[in-house]
Image 1: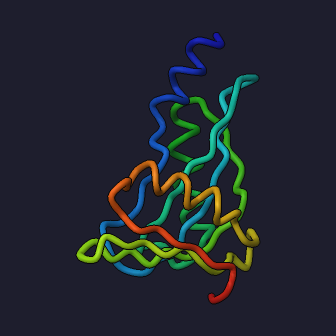
Image 2: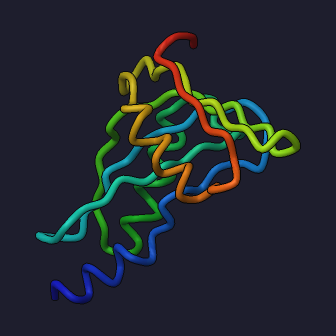
Amino acid sequence: MAAAAAAALSRVADVEIDGGGVFKYVLVRVRAAGGPGKDVVRGHGWAEYHADLYERTAQELAQQGLGCECLGGGRLSHHPEERKIHVYGYSVGFGRADHSVTTEKLKAEYPDYEITWADEGY
């Protein structure tokens, strides 16, 4: 069972964000039943609320037999033409995500980008 749980976890992308623009994001801890967990970033412009992002993510993960919890949220300003992403802000419902964790995840996914973060701003 542990091997299957680890395999399911390994199929979950660390980062799924829109290709550009300013949008909300959530930092989510994904867990396999009784197994290890990992943190993932989800950010999309279609989401009116951070909860919209979290609920869709939770549904997708549940279909794979995985559970999750929201660690917080914020905003992403993604400028692909400049190869820059700025992480900032907070979620009213979930609180502020640890932007340093989010930044590390984004740096791994976008190694040729300049990625910055700040606790200021909404």
